[in-house]
Amino acid sequence: MSLIVQKFGGTSVADCEKIRAAARKAIRAQQQGHQVVMVVSAMGKNTDTLVALAHELNDRPPAREMDMLLSTGEQVSVALMAMAIEALGHRAISLTGGQIGINTDSTHTKARIRSISTDRMRRYLAEGCIVIAAGFQGIDDDFNITTLGRGGSDTTAVALAAVLNADECEIYTDVDGVYTTDPRLLPEARRVSRISYDEMLELSSLGAGVMHSRSIEFAKKFSVPVHVRSSFTDTRGTLIIDQPEDPTAPVSGAALTRNEARVTVNGLPDVPGTSLAIFSRIARRNISVDMIVQNAGAAGKADISFTVPQNELHDTLEAVGEAREVLGPFQITHDASVAKLSVVGLGMARQTGVAEHMFQTLAAANINIQMITTSEIKISVLVDRENGQRALREVHRTFQLELERTPAEAAALPHLAADSHAESARALDVVQQLHGDNMEELLINDILLDATQGSITIHGLPDTPGIAATVFRSMANAKIFVDMIVQSHGSHHASLSFTVPREDVEKAKAAAAALANQFAWKDVTSRSAVAKLSVSGIGLRSHTDVAIRMFRALSETEINVEMISTSEVRVNVVVDAEKGALGLRQLQEVFFDITRT
Ligand code: ADP
Ligand code: ASP
Ligand code: MG
Image (cartoon, rainbow, N blue to C red; front, side, top):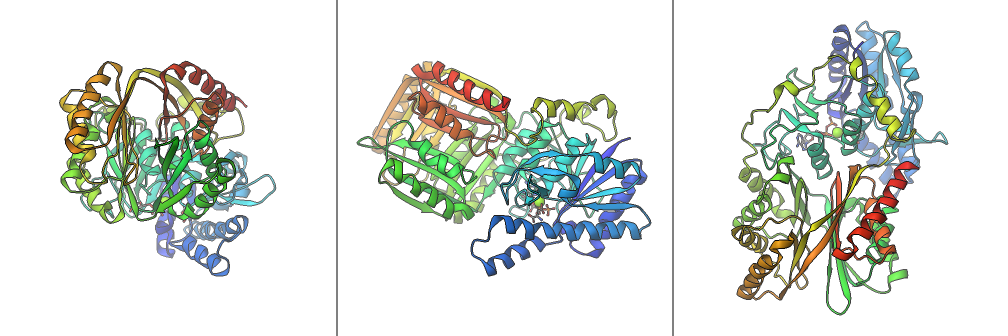
């Protein structure tokens, strides 16, 4: 028998009428012959109300008690949902995370799922009940209630779909699908018919709040088709599966994060182990760091800039400050008035000039880029917060995201209730592959060494619009393929580094030097050969310690990390060419050991 999981977000259960409408959807699915598991969020803004209450009594409420409090929101809505279904003449049972047996670790307010027991749910389903699971919560080994982090009901839903080997996980929400960008920010955003797991992973972790990014980690790991659709209509929404909508498009979506802050640490010792000292202290607090850019300054000193969620700025500054114990004195500055704009697309990995196109567009709009980082399928830039929305609009337009695409290979779409037995071993296989009881464990697929590139760095750049556009226009004119790009922050120290094929290093350096000369930039340095080491897998960013493990592994062998880029599916570091092979062995040892323990 086919099984579907239906998740209803807060706005979809905000009042009794909406609860009844959601109940009817579940009943209808059951009448169509499916077993139905519902996952329900707290009603409306109930979670926000509880958070506000907590803060009225305590500035920094204990995380364990926060979980105790916030989990009640979902307990209310599952009970009401069961009553609504009962009143419509059908059988239902509500269950908390603990009652289902959703076992998590003990990281209160952002716990990870370890295992889920299916026995109880299966028993009720077999009896003909609609099972209603409380979203976003679980229980740790000591029976403490835990929560998975704000927006985490999506993760509950996809995780249940994975262990129950569901045919589809439907996410009912207040939009009718996934859009090219948040339609609340940009009315011209277009709903996409489908989007790949990798693209959705990046977009959700870069600010597209429509899905909790950890839910997409589950979807990808366990091949769960996710269907995002409106709770208020019956039209089909967006399928999140393994293929993109249009494989030829360089960009499939854009996201803007306006709740991030930049932190810059100046005057650090420029020796292996410095980044480790800083980031290990941040990771220990489970804070995810993005846009890490470091650059060597004068007199053996280096600077590091990065972004963190604004609500974790306080903890981050505390963590960085502690590193003085081992690194000696340094300065910390921060800026909470920034916005991070990112574009994402699987197609960009195979095309040239995508970054240049984005930089040209921002330059033409006179928007200054404070920082840049890129990885294979995304480009992120940091701009002033007041320019964020305008930058998003310009970039959305330049990549023609509002234009309708015709989905390729429509035949490859999965169909609900297709032969589910053919794949019945799917979830089980993957779980075994993940070594038992740790569903949200980091999964590493590959560790690679790319020894084909060199790098260019331009130092002493002014903090004005148009710099990156000028540099990459000149590289494009010289027909040079640019791979990784990082631009650091700073009015005196700003520098721009990028990698190019080894055979083009001289040409690229000459082009950069000509510009430096023309615009009185400080100078240009190059490395005829560098090694790029990449770790790819699932959960690389949400497992905040991946970059740290890389730093640690490399610093133990005295390898200095020159450039870094992190994404959901890949972390790249650039190191000295001669250290490439050693670095590769070191990373293989560290990461393949982790996933096997
Ligand atoms: P729920 O309460 O159902 O979980 P959320 O508020 O978490 O709903 O997510 C839905 C919201 O996500 C939409 O109202 C929309 O404003 C926002 N959103 C952000 N980015 C996107 C996007 N790319 N596509 C669709 N919606 C988006
Ligand atoms: N109620 C929780 C929140 O508001 C979980 C969720 O809705 O996904 O964050
Ligand atoms: Mg949500």
